[in-house]
Amino acid sequence: MTGTRGYHHGDLRRVLLAAAVRVIEESGPAALSLRDLARRAGVSHAAPAHHFGDKSGLLTALATEGYRLLAEALHAAGGDLLDRGVAYVGFAVDHRAHFEVMFRPDLYRCDAHELVAARQRAGDALHSGVAALPEGRPTAQDPQGDALAAWSIVHGFATLWLSGALPPRVGDDPRAAARDVIHRLFPRP
Amino acid sequence: MTGTRGYHHGDLRRVLLAAAVRVIEESGPAALSLRDLARRAGVSHAAPAHHFGDKSGLLTALATEGYRLLAEALHAAGGDLLDRGVAYVGFAVDHRAHFEVMFRPDLYRCDAHELVAARQRAGDALHSGVAALPEGRPTAQDPQGDALAAWSIVHGFATLWLSGALPPRVGDDPRAAARDVIHRLFPRP
DNA sequence: TGTACATCAGTGAACGCGCGTTCACTGATGTAC
DNA sequence: TGTACATCAGTGAACGCGCGTTCACTGATGTAC
Image (cartoon, rainbow over all chains, first blue to last red; front, side):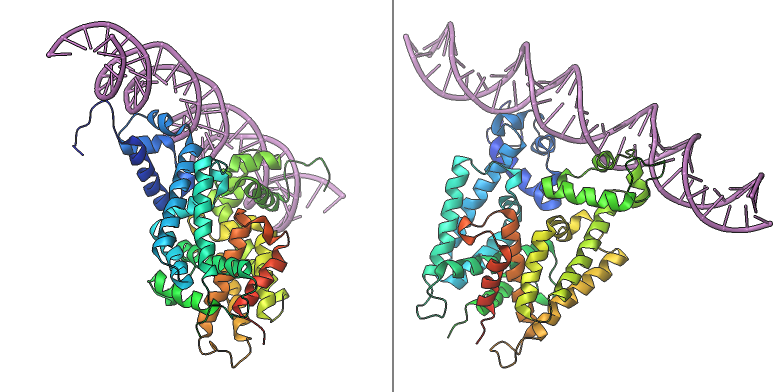
């Protein structure tokens, strides 16, 4: 809050996570170092270890936060599958650092309790959208197959968008472009 | 060929690239170091610089090789879009190190001449599959939209598969699972 | 209201490590004559 | 067939750097009495 701070930072954990997001957005997770984060937070280089133990502890916290944010975003999008798909892409674009770390299980501890729970909740939100598809569709007898196809197409679009591999023709509105792509998988009558 | 080698290695460039593939498959591109590659090749640590200049030079060569292999794989799959999609996923699974580097443009020099050419050829192979779709389809008036959707769904499936995010239920045959997923995007009459 | 004490967050010096890069060198190979 | 020379691939010692980790410490905060 105030410019000067005392011996105790007060909010260091949150500040370190925010700094990590900034670093990853700029240079990717490989460029992350605890010393650099401490420098950015204006704190001694040994301080981060107090909160996260080590680097993979910090990334575990970041991935957990990411799964929570994703679950929230999916729920906020409502029950329609198309909207949920767009929300998935929107999450990836708005939180690219979280998104990138979440799908790099080698970077963090995948079996951490809080992380497992958050991931489960996000997965449920993903699947319950497919259950809401109109009945009488050709593939209605295999909703899990539909869920996998839906996940693939939104995840692929988001990944390609973030890597900058898409041609300029696609435009600069990821949500609109994603909506069109998803619509081809689940056409409306 | 023989166990002993003289002062000159003879095939160091190729051996270094192969070692890089192994390292990336084991630990990801972040774990790559020129000194480690030299060690694995049984060569002094300064030798790699002779062939690649620096690390991003080596990764540029690796990405270029990747785009060449992808273009080959797509052409070898024939003209059918479904088969090309399956081939894309097969390439990603069989050459995960190449695949991973190719879509991390921050790791290499994207404007290198050979790389640009190879990427162009792979992109053409991807698009010409969509052109071969049967006419009279609902979205036939927008083949570029179809191409983007197809690319998204195969890229997403491949990425999810490689990251280990897919549930066990999907099985252990990525090509078969990919075929089913792509089929939902382009159903056969 | 005041004092004593436990707890916790952050400090700063020290360590060893692997890395990339540089540079003068040396051994092997090929070519010209 | 032999010699001289240019070229190139690989060597090995040296450098400085940023990193993670450890550890005894110190300052701030909260609680018990």
